[in-house]
Length: 364
Image (cartoon, rainbow, N blue to C red; front, top):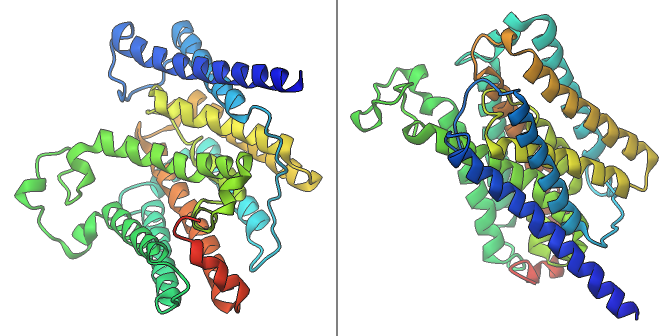
């Protein structure tokens, strides 16, 4: 009888998950057929009753999707694992504090908020420096384990690959130093709206959305999966490279920095999913201090998005907020890099047993 009830419950969860997926697919279809707009069309956020219903459907669909995904999983969330450098709570508080400062500037000093985000400004260079720092950290990690026979080649390759990815994104952020050393844009890269030596400007809209949504999947969804499917951590390779839940918490901050891209379904999926995941983290947390910290994150994330959407007249440029989004993503990548480096360092300093466990880092 117990098996029968369990099977029925599992089937219900699957149905709920599929209904959530169907809801999102329906919205995509309506965007094309009813709203007559491109899936990635940007512009002033729509607040008409029809679009509010659309957002409600997206939220309900996302909620159903995660409800079905969680099913009977009731994991215990532990943010601080008490090994190496304790960066979990300080990273969350530091990221939230930075977000609050930016939000206050936006509300009370919008001209300064705009100035910081100008081309070659503090925000843009900060983003690039964070990405370069992440690249360096992964290069050092590769160097640390290069001659260690116990660490599989696939792990070393992944470290090197991530270093390369961060380097390319950083160079794209500052147009490959074009403006610094005054390089003329090659003919093959001319013709787009910025006329800069950037590969992503050849298809800005597509690459921009891929970057934002890809970062959301890597920095928020994967840490959530690591929590609700703890067996993933049984594989040492996944345990090393899939970000821990505290990364998922700070990763949600970037998902609240939306304005001109708010109408895009992937933007709303990222935001609503972040809120649902944060609530799940709060429910699964067994530490009251950490639970309050997660609830504070929810308050800041929701408040940030609401204030941006309701104060659009303060923007000097419609896409201004995306510059800050592109700051928080590298910031979380940097913290992720430190966490991976911390793990590599601990393994390198260990003897015998711990290093021996690295033998199955290629796939268990």
